[in-house]
Picture 1 (cartoon, rainbow, N blue to C red):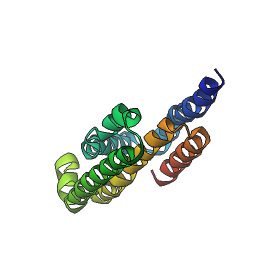
Picture 2 (tube, rainbow, N blue to C red):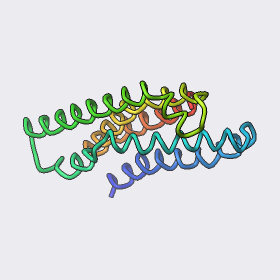
Picture 3 (cartoon, rainbow, N blue to C red):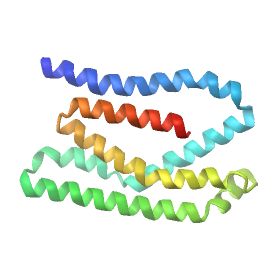
Length: 162
């Protein structure tokens, strides 16, 4: 029962803080951005979400599925192979989006004005996906405090740079 409460406090509290911050930041966004700018932010966020899913290949789910079935070298091979595939695929997709940012901006917004934002998203894709894998590993290895600190640090970085 003690482990349950520790896990609940670290994992549940960290994800709750992220959701709460999204709720708190909404009025700030609506105050400083007009409808068009907020729409652009939301559209670029949606593009990021789709691209991140494509870069993950749902391999984080397979990591969760097979994590406890292997031990020792097989477990390390599973983890390293998933990291290599997710990292490679995410970098490939990020580079593709980075170099076609002007085209994507023109297709989505009828202007190249937002191509820099799209390039920033392209850079975030591999970092975000590898971070996701790291968080999954910390959760399954029961590194509660480390998970909480990394999760909060990630949220702070997202607030600063987005």
